[in-house]
Length: 414
Image 1 (tube, helix red, strand yellow):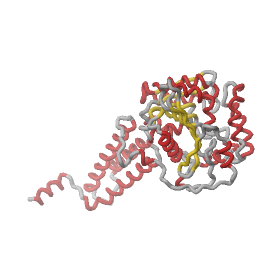
Image 2: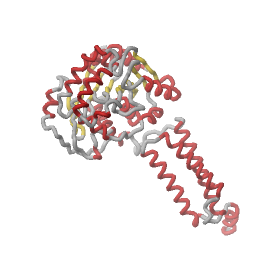
Image 3: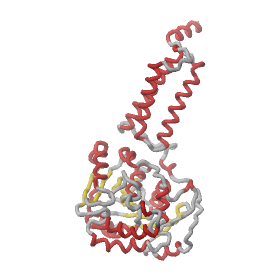
Image 4: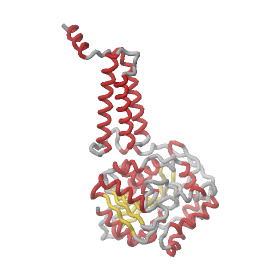
């Protein structure tokens, strides 16, 4: 009776699992490895394209009946099965791409696991006197802490008693540091409860190691995220509005993606979403440090709409040039390959996003923020805002600090 039943099934669906198992494994293996590589490289925008490719290839195989080494009755059902799987994958990634499906954190894929492993970094410095100079250049309210062997400079400020705004975390741009927020610091204290700012490794008064382990690279984005979360934990900030300028804006986007429970909102000030962290005008000078130092002064002028205001902030930037290892951080970052595709991450964010951009920005054109805002609008609706500051250059928080603090407070309320 059982044999008769199996014979009827075989006649209705003549499929030999035993002889076709190798082909099943090969198709599944190729598909899985390809999609794994896509996700490992953070190329979420490629997933629908890759699924479409598998779908087209499978349809081609079914229609052309290419595997002649197998009996057609055994091969065609296998390919039809693959067609169904490819169609299901296509539908799934389409739903993810359209933000119809949102993955929740689990114990396995918790964002806490994204912290850098506790690997001691064996640092090496070619400038033995730098550590002493860094401490001498610090302000009275400067603080230092070690993150996996790297000394990080930061400041934490308590807002005034009447301040009701959210906590802020300030991330500087390429070539700047905590001192870049100096002009607007007093204005921000009036509106926000607590303010945290820190120097990324290689900038400001933080360490500039020249030798380190590849798995614990202090100039990589993974380590920067570790620094951000470690400092927030150290000063007791459970959540905060992360404000990123230039390169710091790109880091704010990545932080919001990996730590959605810690980042309540991001404010992007002239962010480098579609550009390299390093300004195009700086790259030709990276192989010649003396010329890079000379050109650094010219960059300050290009960053302002009103050139008369350059002298007010130039003193702090010029102070950094006293460091013998000043350019080490820039040269190290220039060697790094950008780990994350920021423009692919932005549409996936669920937190509110605001842009602040000067209308006369020579370094990062206003068109970049306008394009990002246009692409975000369908996904974020009222949670996305764009603020354009008139008669302002690349550093609105330095050129127009009072107006910037007001605009920032408005953005934080959205």
